[in-house]
Length: 614
Image 1 (cartoon, rainbow, N blue to C red):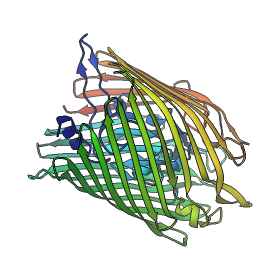
Image 2 (spheres, helix red, strand yellow):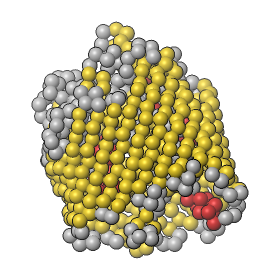
Image 3 (spheres, rainbow, N blue to C red):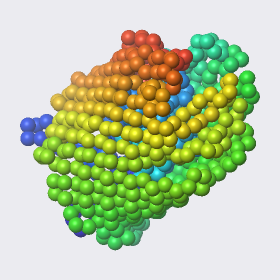
Image 4 (cartoon, rainbow, N blue to C red):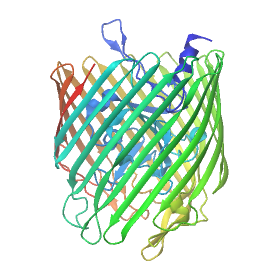
């Protein structure tokens, strides 16, 4: 087997494997040429971004440190194909829409563990702490034929920090800022030639802002969150590797209740995964893993008392990769998962299982690359479903790569949509799964220090699930005949001398074919520009965000105005290990909303001190 194939086997162990960014390479003119980073989320196998047949973006730890985010949404908003809405800042409900699809059409993975709620459908993005994250991979476009249900719009995978060979390295940080915000954290990592480990913990709390002017009290709605993450791996004498990852977030978020009193939600957000992986032969790699995901939310509402929604998912997965020839890979495997819910109201059903089997084929044909995937799912609640995808790539030149793909996907109805007995939201057991067909054509130009990625796409969704009023104050989900979404994306970046620049633009044309209206909370245009400059021990940077108008509701009666934001940042390296950082967010003090009636913060200042042992 070639050395290139061997490295791919070692790197492409699973979606839960951390793949570090490729280091810079010396260029002939004395500057550094940045190689494209490795990714594993598009196919579960390691490949560079410019080799991928998917549209994928990477946010690494260096970028997270530069941008100094308070929330994960700060890192994701305005990215190509990505739209975010929230019911206020700091731990309030946050929804991510990929390529104009519903928020529950984006699958969140934490170290390979699916984290979408079986009751609410979407993922609890607001409980992910940036301090625990090593990198984020954002894959746009359907991935149901790889990961199963929920990935109509795309997949976002969050990787926690991992250790490297060497003595223990410690890190710590502490900070404070506007709205009586305080944060701190510690971590340690290291390893030997056979074993690696990383452990970290962080805490964030803020008084927040008054999220709703016309509801509840006028006091700020605070948020606090304590998180832990850990990663361990050990290579056995025979070559097999044992691995384990864990993440847990726990805290409380306040909101305005209907009675004018302060109410709150307690949460637990947890992902655990472990298993064994290794080469069965010199061409056959295999991984067997088990995982558990928890999403628990206890709500204390003075108008309705206590209610709770607990989701727990257990999964067993087996994955295999067979390598042959010059870069050909055949992957196959299966997974079995069981979802269980526990709620404060009686549901007709509280558990269901899903058994899935899939196969993938990646062919390297010189200047041409072909990829295909096929998956079969059998679900206890809604029956079986077959999804597939085909993709083609062509190296037009050494720097220009063309690609196209066509794929199908589906989304299963949630327990709330099927069985909810709540007076304001009545379940509909006659719902059918949402099904989609997507196609895209794109091109990526990769220079030594510059890249440009652009594409156009179209997605058609049949039986889209939406809500309608069936009685005063009572809604019920139903299947819309069809929704069509067309769009274009542009992403670009450059690293020249001491400058780092990246930008993204998204255009969407979306329609509910049942009514002719636009789909709610999808801006037709959005853009993001990040600029950073290193000045010796100092660095300065800025992020500009722009978002076009949208509608808050399905009838298009409530319009949300577009807006633009400017965030500024700076840092100073006191010593090689100590760094002082500061941000000025919403520097122009703009008033804006991403959901009708929910405020967002005005101008805010944050300062933090970081220690990172090298």
